[in-house]
Amino acid sequence: MSVQKATAIARANIAFIKFWGQRDAELNLPANSSLSMNLAGLTTITTVEFSPDYDDDLVSLDGREARGEARQRIVAHLDRVRAMAGLQVKARVISENSFPVGAGLASSASGFAALSLAASRAAGLALSERELSILARFGSGSACRSIPGGFTEWTAGTSSEDSFARQIAPPEHWELRDVIAIISRAHKPVGSIKGHALAPSSHLYQARVASVADRLAQAKAALLEKDLATLGPLIEEDAISMHAVMMTSRPPIYYWLPGSIQLIHQVQSWRAEGLEVYFTFDAGPNVHLICQAADQAEVERRLRDIAGMLEVIVSGPGPEARVVESF
Ligand code: PMV
Image (cartoon, rainbow, N blue to C red; front, top):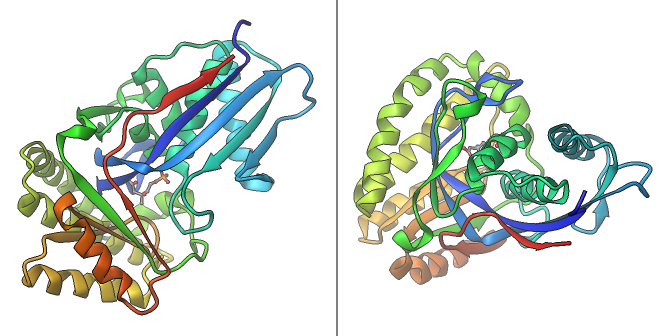
């Protein structure tokens, strides 16, 4: 075993066309393909060291030792890497997020992308981008989109081998911005693992899945043409479609808070005034406002003026997951 320790960096991503619901939970194969932008400003840096000196896997997340389910998910991912590398030794994992802890932003995409790269490299494996994306998918579906850089598409595929993300345009392709309005830092009522499993119980689910391919093709073409007037409404439609499925699942999941709805209306009136900005959501109440770089300062300013706004985080398109250091 030559390399035993490696550090990798990966970015979170915001989906323009979302993943919500699986056709195979064990392999984490999605019901539909999805499209996203990596977020340069939202990073996870993870170091993994395999050593015979450790009696058990030690996991530190943002300076605190992980326990319970959070630790278990990471240990299961280390087990996948150990199985691939034929390795038996335990590991020490140290992971730090650049974005504020507990800001209600999903860290699983950047987290599992960085973990996949650091752990595989530390285990002596030299995986291709495709293999890394597939490995990251097992940790968290959206993590497979944080392996390639820029704007990426996760093709649903027909099996585990062809369900991975590819770059459709590099980060420099388009100076888009995700201006994130943090209106709540509370923990999600239902995590995405449970949410994906509940999705098929919604009577809207089949209709959503059937409508995604068309929307994705249109969104991808608009993205490649840098046509925000076409892309924006598709981003909003897809986010609303996903939340409609969430709210009609049995039991229903309500991620929105009054402030989320307030911002939907706000964005519409700002647009009517000529400010080109669109909203989207992940599985949470915080609002992601998508605009071009030239409008970022104005969007930010208007958000900061809203009563109850806890924080505004801004990011442009980010690069691929990278090894920072290996020993
Ligand atoms: O990667 P997961 O299992 O946390 O699911 C991601 C779910 C959403 O963030 C709501 C949508 C997406 O495609 O990123």
